[in-house]
Image 1 (cartoon, one colour):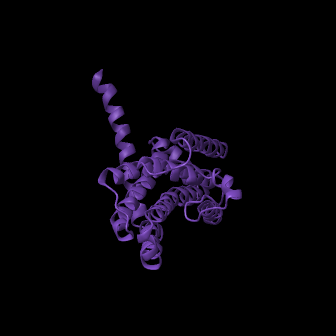
Image 2: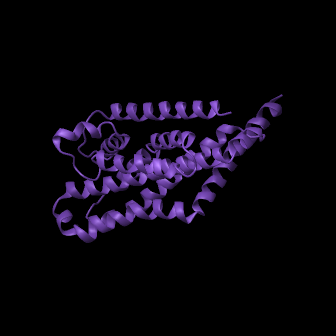
Image 3: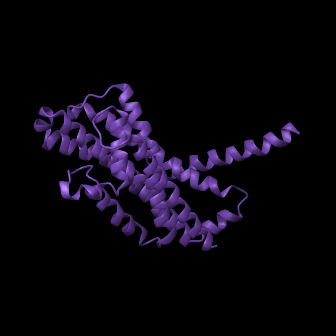
Length: 254
């Protein structure tokens, strides 16, 4: 009786692990996806935080931290939004979702695999950002880097949910455009890269990027706005709500 119970569960966990492994390998082997998300955040940080404004940043630790956090959060947003948005749209349009339903594998393994793939990319982004941080006159302890990385990896979930919703509704050709329509305004209007005027600060509170930025600052004991638990609640609510909407839409499509 014990073997009959344990074996199916072990096989199920193995199915999840295999799905996550091959999804990650597939995206790592796609230069058009892996290259920008792994190299762009650290590259832009080096350009703006070191080459262009290095002398000014060296005089102002707050500016150094602001620039570092901004490009770190930008690196968190991309894999989930574009990964889920483009992959789900493509597989849905070509009937691969219907094929997955017919396969003897849990359908949730596919969603979990893409989420783990996005989190793996975020972890790699944080490694690259931690490597270049000293060049921007920013000195974080190992504990700070670890806490920041954990928050950013887990904080990629709401962006996965947003990408999932776009992928469940848009076509394969239009999904990248819709993702960019969300991605770029979210960067500029969340205040993570450019301070917003006082009259427009309320707009930033509508963006999950703002809440993740404040939560990441709290993780390294840096000055931040709002209650960290409120930011957690907002990010969790966005994740649950948009994931539920996407699942419901895909279920209606058969």
